[in-house]
Image (cartoon, rainbow, N blue to C red; front, side, top):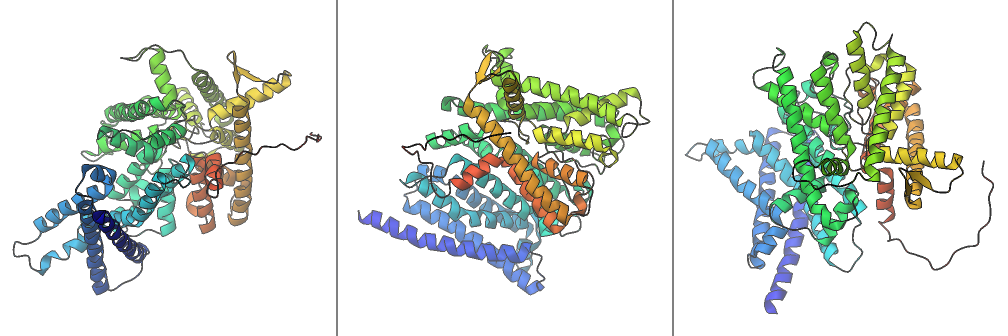
Length: 589
């Protein structure tokens, strides 16, 4: 009992230390990443202070482990803390390995100037800032108090990744110029994490290799979801999923069976890496003969664009995106197939693998969800291709061979499904093509995939409800199945909420931006659908315009209904009432 009192008292003291470290980290991050002008002496003092902060955090981790009797369970529970600790010790070895054996004062600047040291220190302080929040959330999840809902965790996880990405892009090592505006860094990090692809700066020329690496990691994590990635590595480490984690992931991945969550997560990551590797291989074979790449960069470009395509991000290292490859059948088919499979959703892909009995998969029937997704996706691609050919034959596709026109129309029909790549110049399209593309971007990809929009299933149910109403039927029926009324209501609600949101943000942008209305709404819907196609006004947006687009990208990735549920659950959980008010009719239409 005395030992338990000692442990609790020590933990309280350490918690105060952690809060103090958090405050210091916030202050130092604001000074460093806010591009404040400081003298070399102050810069050196700040660097030393940052290392002291991280060192104390490492010591705090060891002390906490010691007062918990060095239990392995505690180590597994706070594994990120120990990863940071191990990385700190490893970095010390690297820094001292660079320094003279005499250990003179010459080694001190390495803590300030060495790139890997600067990156590590920024990451460490960002983690320290978030550490108290994570501990509070973990403590609340074990208590009898109301727990954070899965929707809230989902929103927080994306916000956290964006914060980390913004901090890394603000580092001098991330840009060729050595500096970047805070809003531009936030815009880029949000666009990458929300797999959008809208950019205010050219990714290939403005960012260094490190900056580009940050964007592709954000795309990969954002496309899959932070919780999916972390849960996958937890499963690889032999740690099972708790019921709470299973419930969260089942909500995030749109599956109802908790027993299938862990298997689906592993399958999701394996399929993702497989698709990206195959896509990179085809791009490498095609691009290996081009003289534009430096030695060794073909593989890098291939992998970057493959990941960007499968995650439906649309980030490209080429200044004109993929316009130089409009007639390249390999690039067109590889990129579009990656976009389509990434946007179908992992549940659909797994159902198809089971249906066709690939490998060890058992035979399953095609579910209603899979049938609806495949039909809507196919119809949208076909109709989109025909409409683009009709509207751009003598405009955006003019003076091109027939095969190139067909490839260009097909590519631009697929890419509004939230991918953002383009092979034809988007600034030269007709207003009719802009309008049609806006509709495709609004619909977006499919649930459980890497894309955005209201989703193909929502659009399918919306059309199905209209057809059922015209036929005089009370139920929405598809493929000899009835859609639950709650699902139909959610589809209609999501569509309505999205239109209201876009109307509000569109009105603000029409006031703040000096651009054609069709271009403004094109940019806005592209942000919501996490598409990334641009009418050419992104780089000219005002500060307010950039912030509106940032908010739209975030809402588009997490989903309007998810965000509303997360906010509504901040105050209280849903409560059922034991009464109903009497009905009274209201005229409609």
